[in-house]
Image (cartoon, rainbow over all chains, first blue to last red; front, side):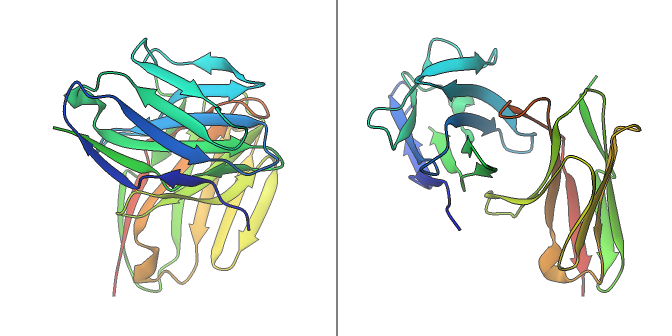
Length: 110
Length: 109
């Protein structure tokens, strides 16, 4: 069964550094999403993406965040200047005939 | 007020017990997800429901749209069922998913 793939599974970065989290959605899906889960908290919506543009974003998704679908297969989340509070599990999801979550990237900002 | 609530927050069961986890939501939805999250953190989709009942192995999910309530049942529970179970609502097709707080299940041998 097709999967949503996320890389890396774990990333450690220094505060202030830029990070790019990568996702490969299911190939015929058209809707893409990023979610975040801070340790011990519930999963929160960050942003949805359709037709090469952001369709909705949450208050969390400020100017430090951006998303891109650079080559028609990857879907990336960039955090420009990481803060300690960006440490979380980041999940990608894609929607088409079904809604599928990736296995997540654990981001640790030190 | 949270749009998606779950109960109980934590649940400990003996192996073999029948388990029920409840979810209630306050918004109109097109579908509801039940998800499983193991300690490693990855999310696995168990069910997506828009009406009625679905069954997969020992797992059964039901939804009552009028009452805005869904339940996840696990029959003959096993220690490998230990995980966090999350209910998540989708208002419209292809909309973002609104997550509940999760129910942490521990099944003791």
